[in-house]
Length: 250
Image (cartoon, rainbow, N blue to C red; front, side):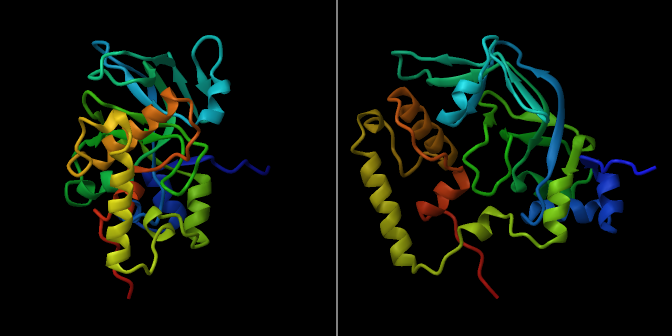
């Protein structure tokens, strides 16, 4: 009998599949060579602390009449748009329920290399990996990070395939260039200058705000004004602003 191939592998099974150790899997994930996912079982918000969604405009029509958007691997529920005239309250799409398989950022795995028993503290998860993907939804935990045991880490079938075939999947590899530091600095100054022309940024210091919050604000303002812009990852924005140094090529 021909058995179907597994769609995902917990860490122990992924290690067997790749003929390595579980710590090797963690390391491959931490350096961006392998995309890792987590499994969440019906995670609901508490105390009214809604989850913030970065959702592409073209996916909005996939939200059903009950406020759900889903595919075979994940489900996001209680989706609604919130707007406010109070500048202290963020606007955009929010959710109160997530379940299924979601990708995590590679930097969330670094601590696990040194402390095998620590919990994962996730500020964001996504339906897509860290490579450029405009068709994924990012879920942010603005009030407090999501705490989850590493036993819920897993590797999807396609991500094992990508590693075996040496596919470049790291965001750092995809955006690396040979631009001179002066060029990078000028790009960052230009972006900040353009942001300061936007009225909503009049009370915000773009030099000190974190890249993740800056990306969230840009996305929220674009949605409020119904402007369709490409989704941008906070790490990518950091590089565009010249805040994150590229790895040195050997």
